[in-house]
Length: 154
Image 1 (cartoon, rainbow, N blue to C red):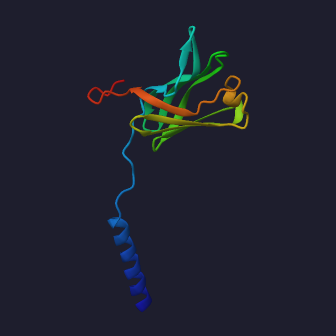
Image 2: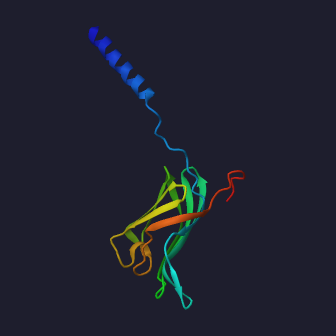
Image 3: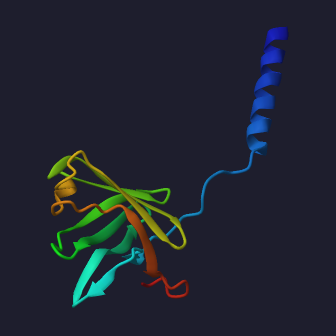
């Protein structure tokens, strides 16, 4: 009987402590909007040197987003990479992968009001993720437009 009372007291204390802990869940972030690669470029004789790119994102529901992605290496080759796909979305994070490169994972972190950090990982450094030669998507894409808080439209 005494053991049951001790166990009951311990379980009661554990539940009381768990309820006293503040919630660690983050507020839902709607990533819908238009993003532009925040990178220095220069234009010389009509040619753009340096990486540039865009992302268009549309929230489908609380767990899926549609992503239209484009990145370009710039002059002189203008090698580029792009995709359009529906991605799973959870806790401000989405990830893209492709059968063109099984080692490819492009992660989108939408947990910043200013934009999204994109991180590309691939074993193929020349044509990773099915992109053009030497193209890498990694960088910070600044949010240019978002969802109107009154109309909930992009």
